[in-house]
Length: 182
Image 1 (cartoon, rainbow, N blue to C red):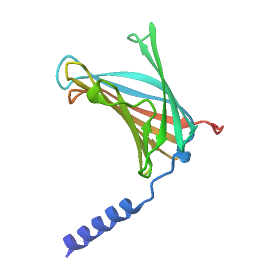
Image 2 (cartoon, rainbow, N blue to C red):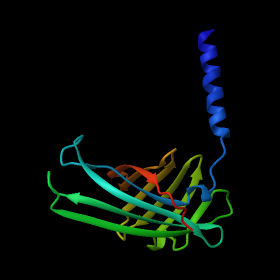
Image 3 (cartoon, helix red, strand yellow):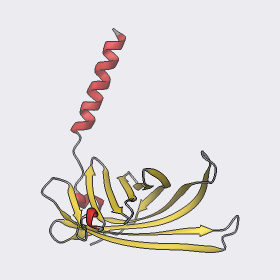
Image 4 (cartoon, rainbow, N blue to C red):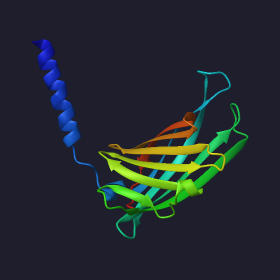
């Protein structure tokens, strides 16, 4: 009897969760700032090198029911005292597609013709962005960002794949700034 009740409770909980409404893109608008840890595979299998990474994300509206996302990262290099900083910044603009909560990067092309492609999807509290590219030799690269809204801001999970192998994984906790980005 307990097993039946437990199964029913789990089924109910998963049904309620799947019925939860997806967020709308405007709920992601804002400026977020924080830090986290990059876990890069080391030379030995199973070992990970951990590095602190700082990040800023800004999401704002764009034309045609779309949005622009800008993000920057700062990685400090050095053992105990940082000797060097590596900074990178990116920007992408997405337009709404025919499917609800689905967006296409305005610069996306056909990966079979050597052009990069990217899309975004909102599922529940998470805005996922996937970037896909194919090299001339047929090898491929995928970067996957999950940006999940939290009570204080946003959790970010970044994963980079090269030919189905994870080469970088980052987890960040970002706090939402006080001003609304327009």
